[in-house]
Image (cartoon, rainbow, N blue to C red; front, side, top):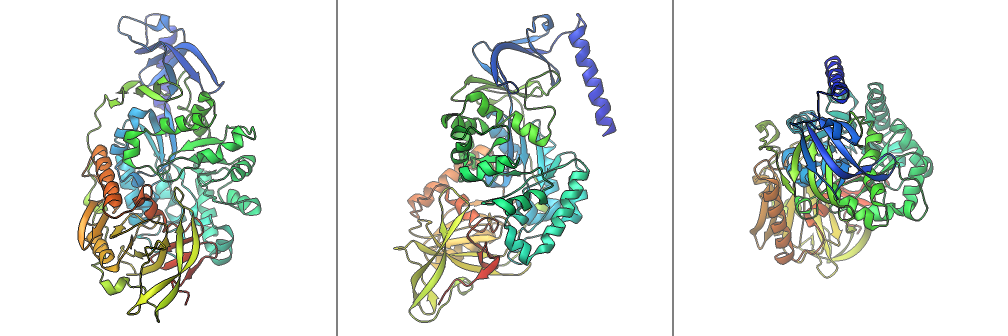
Amino acid sequence: MQAENIKQAIQWRKLIDVLLDSNQFADLVLKDGFVINTITREIYEADVAIKGEHILMVGDASELIGSRTKVVDVRGKFISPGFIDSHMHFESAMLTCTEFSRLSIPTGTTTIVADPHEIGNVLGVHGMQEMIKEAKTLPNQIYFTVPAAVPDAPGLETAGFEVNSKHMAELLNDPYVQGIGEIQSFSNIQPVYENAPELIDDLVAAVSYANSIGKTVEGNAPGLFGKELAAHIISGGTHVSCHETTTKEEMMEKLRYGISVFMREGSSQRNMAECIRAITEEGMDSRRAILVSDDMVPEDLLKDGHMNDIVRRTIAQGIDPVEAIQMATINPATHFGFKDVGLLAPGKRANIAVIDDLNEMTIHQVYLNGVLAAEKGELTIELGTYTYPESVKKSVKRGPVRLEDLHIQASGSRARVRAIVAIPDQNLTGADEFDLNVSNGVVQPCLQQDVLPVLVVERHGRTGNIGKAFLNGFKLQSGAIAESVAHDTHNIIVTGTNYEDMVTAVNRVIAMDGGIAMIKDGKVVGDLPLRVGGLITDELSGKEVSEKIAELTRLAKDELGCSIHVPFMHLSFWSLVTSPEWKITDMGLIDVDKFEILSPVVK
């Protein structure tokens, strides 16, 4: 840190020289644009002068223009700080940091705070460190918030590795690690307190260490109010966020408590429109309201954009454009304590988005560290490609399964079963019971009621478990879908209209060393290998992954009759035991609220 401080002092001294020495000039001046001031919420005409990686000044920069100064006329355009995505997972896009950045930089995103707990669940500290290593090669600012507890619910799920307070020193002292990520292990407050109090002790120890070295902590408080919410805030060291807020009432209480509410607006979970009502209808202050993507598929990045699209949607809800931009710039910078981004001011990092249309958030140019990085939707810098080492591949550590391994058994000719109820565009689920036919001792799917078997096959080579339940609302008409992306422990999740296609789908995922597989009548309809931790690919570009996922989504609809939005992402969330109500893990059907395993068959 001493070397960094010395370097910073030298840079500041050079900036002062340029400003006060009449013989020194800016490298770049963005001339005559409309500057968006994220501190005062103003828009006014001004120049932005840049030297090296930093902003010299905002105002009349005519005296800083020399013979070698590049002057860019941005008359009629808006100059904004680059956007910040405060909470996301590269694994959910199935992309490397490099390929995600290739798609997001042209949309105006210049800073990302990523949570690598997906790869952490599969490969532990080593997997997270390999992802951080990749991020260090990129020109955009990428920071990480690492998990303090893997798995989130010990005894209810099996992860590839454990991560706890003992690993915090090794992870948190990396300068690219911002702090502790979403503290999901204490989302289900009362059940955890009553059944696994040791998780709280370990969490408080990790948080205390993080705070002692100046690191932040992110919360995870779905549906929490009153004393439970208060306990969650304290467990996170009192300064926390929450990206699981889904109602106006939750938003209001959390803002009143000083929580930074990360209003999620990703590909399959969209909560901003409901959360923003606390501001548009109740007039609440928006300084703690922050826009995040959480989970995005590459197709949406290519088609709609990244944070610029989320800002656009927020404006459409009645928020002033500058206020919406604050939610993706100065608000997150303030939450994380970022001193060099989030606003256009002297000495700040020259991460800038030049916007054509303020309401539509169309991005004309993007500057990273004072360098033109993208223009009219295309990168103008070279990113290259990134290949991960073999140490983070070969993560599927089990052999093929047999047909009888997947059967859900019951006696008689009819059985009453428990089913997870899908809630579109949410990771929350419902719970219900249905009556199904039994044939030869095996409970049969029922397309008329849209009730299908859903199973999770442990793939880390630790237990060999196969958890079993039923699923209502996936809208699958034939075949089966399996994938090794199954939050958060990322075992293999599978559902289908018949057990034969389900076993073929699971074994295809195993054979690929992770990925997505769709089977119909015993044949592969489509697949996508994800060999890095069974979560992402380093073999395809972001555009190629987008095209492949789009093709698989089309095949899921046309060949398998699955009409639910982003089916692979929805399926992956039905094993997330940190959000209510029922979920499925390799241990079985989980009643999240009661912290217990249920039989899939009632009687």
